[in-house]
Length: 204
Image: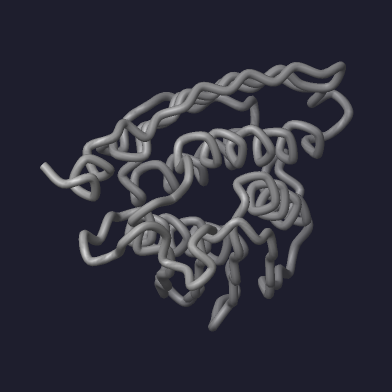
């Protein structure tokens, strides 16, 4: 078995725990899973979105979060993004041999969102999603950006989320999570043609 083939056999798993005065979060991740796991954050809509990410990227994810929801959802949503980013960072390792780049467009009824992803280690997010309401249940829609920003900057990776169409806020956000998940599923795959990192610098 070649070194490159050995790389593709590695286990890409991680476990992260983070506790502050505002939140307590535990996360167990397997990048090469089947979409299984239990997610509980105390924010039902957010759980629904994280389940879309898990299911459509074929990762196994157990995530439990408790936070100061009596104040609002901000700390919990942002800190889940931080923890999920750190879990992805650990599981991806040196990112040797991965495809790295991917994009996906996902429709959900009238909404369509495009995700363009580079699994480099340069954190950046371009975000162009627009909503015509402020909240869905106890999830403030401005927190969608806070989640993606915390996730991208702690993983880290470069992410563009662009709304092509859409009116319904639920549909727009969900299409974004699904588009990211499908792009990530492709970008995380190994390509045996790639020697080392897919970068002229020799490292990502």
